[in-house]
Length: 253
Image (cartoon, rainbow, N blue to C red; front, side, top):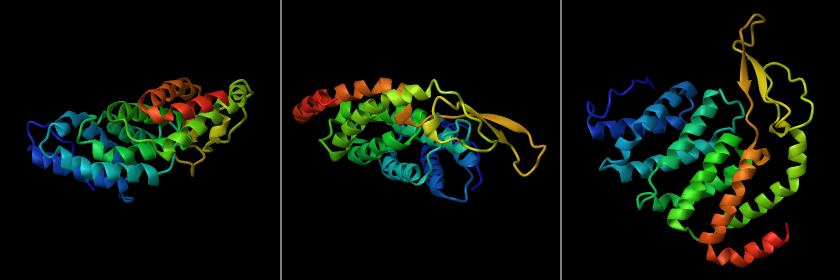
């Protein structure tokens, strides 16, 4: 699909604009559209998101984009190199989800969004997990959704993270290992490896080499660890029926 930048909401009829953005979102799951093109499309959607939320077609727009966003995120691979278009795209889609106003238009989609966000806490990289946490917090504050198995699983997950904390901290002080060019280190090597060298054209010996930043897995991130108590307290506040469970859970730490 050819990408043509929009000249602004004052030039393009709002209905036409919404149709265009629906096409952009649909392209997310098109394997023939390059990540670079998808990223430009989502950047335009992000830049004009206030116009989207004020449109009369906004509710219908949400019904189409949220399932597509969630499918794209679930079907795509987790990325651990910050500069890769695929990572920038995944992060931007999560940021757009976070910017969706928490009003009645969003309420019907809360369950599906939360289910994916909770799942991503265990698999996604640090940058994306921090956004997932903000989404979870906002949706629980606004909608107070019913208790789900995901919440119980999340609390067990947090408990396991704290048990593994000494091992994670030790990794930050271990000597770095040598990583071959164009090789992505396993996320478990957080703290040991922060950058890698990547050849622009791996097939050529004289290819230009660029440095990429390695993002740790969220479950191994001290930044994520610092945010977890906030969401645990939130669960305690908004889910009254979880109080007894949380009391037992805290005693077992």
